[in-house]
Amino acid sequence: MAKIAILGAGLGGTIMAYELREALGKGHEISLVTLGSRYSFVPSNPWVAVGWRDRETIEVDLEEVCRRRGLALHPQGARRLHPEEKRIELNDGAFLDYDYLVIATGPDLAFDEIEGLGPEANSQSVCHIDHALQAKEAVDALIRKPGPVVVGAVQGASCFGPAYEFAFILDKALRDAKVRDRVPMTFVTSEPYIGHLGLDGVGDTKGLLESALREHHIKWICNARVERVEADKMVVSEIAEDGSVKQSHELPQVFSMMLPAFRGVAAVRGIEGLVNPRGFVLVDKHQRNPAFPEIFAVGVCVAIAPVGKTPVPVGVPKTGFMIESMVTATARNIDRLVKGLEPDAEATWNAVCLADFGDSGIAFVAQPQIPPRNVNWSSSGKWVHAAKVGFEKYFLHKVRSGVSEPFYEKLALHALGIEKLKEIRIEEPSAIDSKN
Image (cartoon, rainbow, N blue to C red; front, side, top):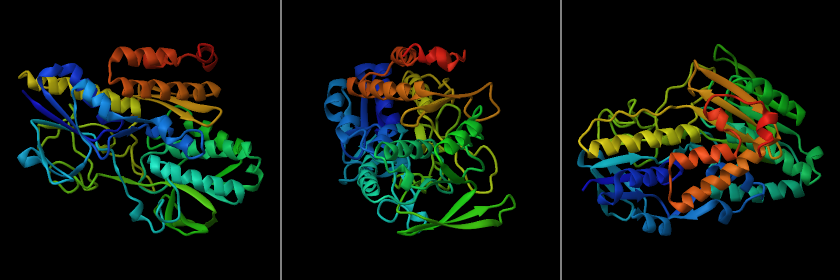
């Protein structure tokens, strides 16, 4: 009997446990290590921050699902990984041994790298459900007493989609509250241009997002390095191509939401051979760590080099579609190892992304995610908002049911009207919208 441990129960880790159970059957021990017993659908956090969702709507208690699926849940979380011993030290002092390990921790949020950044200081976040609920209180205060707003992503950030989403969702919430006319908004980003997204753009994301920002009266600053965040202002340096400061900005703010840079979690950070200097896990084409071949990694914790040099550091996002391809490949590779075979599966690393704007949105397809690409497509429309809502319902149903099968993935994409995108036969938005 093989012992497989999964460290982290987010989007990647939870589905990893389900797929491994499907692949390996009941004859092997699968353990899921996470802090707490609740799964939270992070892509819904921008909606939580404006009161369109609550905690109960987007969370799933994993205890009953794990019991039903024969998965051992360890909700005390991990203190430290000891890869030489093939053991995980848990936060309560206990140890969990493994034959194979999948690291799916997601990131540590590096708020401390910028003075005044983060929910415990002078800005809000939508990276965690608790942060989003705190942001909701700040949004309520903003509606009661309108003033300047700054939204965006700081230097070193690698997840830009939620920043754009929140800017437009907040715009919609403020319009609904009839106070948008009293809230000047600025989008501040480390990207070299609007729509870069850490991917050097996809299709016409630059044109689509610049147009959307103009249409919604949102100013922007690119190549931005946030120096500090104070209670009433954000100090930002706009960096030129040669690395010099092109212009300094002191942006007044009564509310700000800035996505931080990511780094690896403390449990794995600093382990030689396992992680890079930022703490992200090093993997080969089979999602396998070269130094510790019994360890695999999926999701945001995986080390991926930036797409190119930029005046301000910009990371590469790991989209949901990309993460699920990592999961499927890893499940097959561990199954083969258990059977005495060598890994042969590789993740596709394609991206299909739905960015919601509250009443419309932008979708893009990148195949592969990192350029140069075979497919480089983007489009916008109200159908994207409907598709994002549908995907939320589908994914939460999948987590509650404890099932992860390609058939359901295909069925959901067809129901959302984007099956053609997965097959890379692109339809016009009007044709896609007619199916919803």
